[in-house]
Image 1: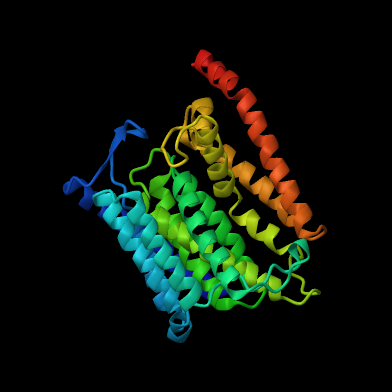
Image 2: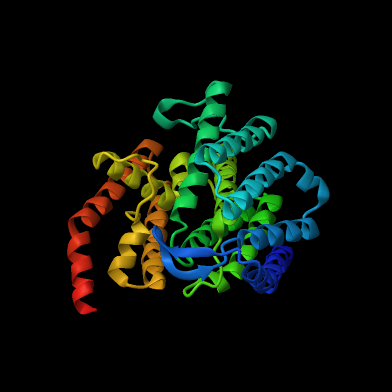
Length: 355
């Protein structure tokens, strides 16, 4: 167990110690994210913290994971590199959305087809088990692209995206460890350490943001790690102590927040006859920021809700069939959205009056 601790600490210290140097460098070069317009922060803040997150993650991996194990994930690392450089370019000089999407498609294809990381079976969902290879490719590529972009969209207030990712990767790290997948557990320890080191500077008031450099890479890694979780979990023996019988529901619990928020926003924009890709301030974190008045307050509420609902889904995944848990999860999301839509205006007015 000590090697996982050392790997995590290595990444944490690297991230923690190098982040102030990056902040200083970006400020001197005037590479800053200006507040106002669609942005909810004030002033000028550096927004390429993902550079240090990725560097700390890679450094700890190279130090603590055997090179042959790293080599077996070379296609995933190549894909992450593509997303990383697209993120840097977008933070410095915004890329057109179609170009970012093209890079993500190529990266997802590399992981799924060249890296052979895709869903081979529906594991009994709706009575379906083995599926055609092309369908497995298509579902996996779409999943990676959707989760990558959904995670990017929740990175809207101080500390939120990094905290969500830390919680999800922590669960995965412990789960992979107890199922004997030590290489995966070590990878999770490395990214957790890098994120915690970054969070120290990203919690309100943030001195640096993740930027697309970080949110796209972390979202991509969360998507591929969730795919690994689904595959490993689905192939465990039925009597394995760590197996979740409802395979896809357990995977959904990890990415529940970005999936819920992105789906909700797309539906809202379509109902308002707007483009679903048009940026606005209707995300869950924007709403709760209006209610609480602080980034930290909004982030704490969202994190508590995420952990509570995800834990409920994990628990239900042990006792009910996949389609039942998925339907129940959708029902919970609909109820939460209904409550939000009915009470948003009243809560915002109440907070404004108190202020």
